[in-house]
Image (tube, rainbow, N blue to C red; front, side, top):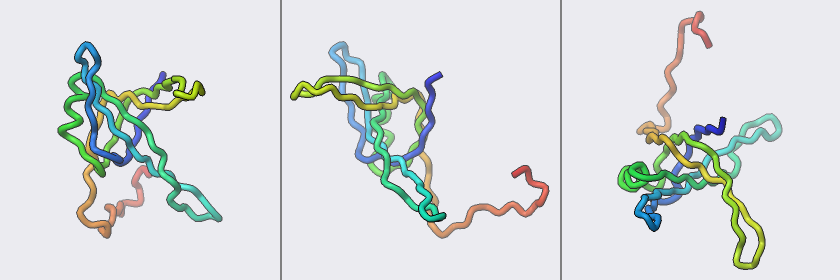
Length: 124
């Protein structure tokens, strides 16, 4: 089964294009943060960029609902596209064909602490 759920930030405003038969394709680039352990300490690594596409009515709606900088969680399937460059070199890229997307609201204050569970019998 090819299924992926990923959270990241939009790198630019979504764009919309239409196929020759009028089907909408909405897309945006998404930066996904990576954490790397260096000398026993977790640090932020370079972001991984992924192109996300939605088709039909969903493709049209993302243009109105999301914008650059929004944090979103996207579910979909990973697709590898192949083509030949103008120079004749084979090339490929990974894209996420989205089926669902939600906006992740950020806290107003970065200093807000997460809830603390005081019950020692908590399941985690």
